Length: 175
Length: 171
Image (cartoon, rainbow over all chains, first blue to last red; front, top):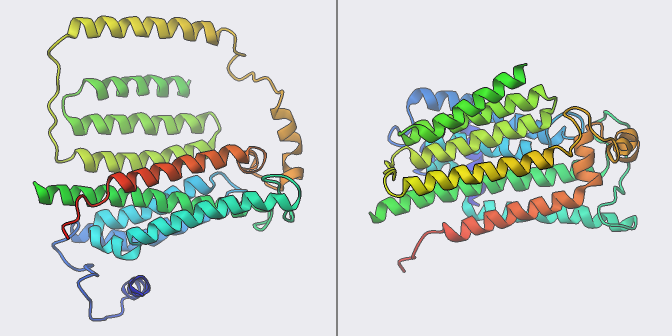
């Protein structure tokens, strides 16, 4: 439930609607994150970076790129958000547990695509309809594999960064 | 020609990264090596690798800068420098000898042996439906390797989440 609220919060902040904000959306708090210039530019660019990552994942079988590169770009958009606004704003979008779950779902999806080949007789066989070349929905299971690898890599790298930042905070507290 | 300029630049940046005293400058010099490698991939007509190299380099640079920006690690330069220098030179000589022996047997640069690749290039589009031949190889013909890579990354993330979890819950 908290996740859904956080996502709605992103929407409203992006469209500029006013709403009483909790402590969890520390968008306008000057004490966390970087300066106002960085925050304004981040608000404009973070969606475009994520869109570009999704484009690279979905067009992996048509143009250079693929699941790994696009996933890293999606992770970089969240890292951008975290560097500009501070740890809590980014962690409110995707918490550590949700990151772990999504990573597992991505890995399971890739394994499922691999096992789908047994419908045709062997592991990793491209059983789906090939379609016309140069169409978006072509190439059978390659599109599904790209999507699952993109989810896995993006969320996994973001989880690594989140764990490193949380470790830094807690070790400073003990010192 | 451009490739040799980039290679010389990469060697210079690597030497700077080793020799400079400040840790942050060293990290930025390593980043320069990575971006030059990205341009080298573009010149050698491998845009897939160039994109991957660029984004992974940015992520590594952000993590390294965040890790080193507030720390001032002491450099250990005194001690057994004679032994270290001679052993390093010896290992470099052994490495160069064996790499010369191995590289003598390889086909020349830009003249590959088209044994397996020819089949992929001729039948790739009709068998997989994927126009990008790199994706056709890594996600269809050689998808088992990709599954192993995904497992490696999954294990790495599990290990990092286990090691770096919040230490010692109070209650």
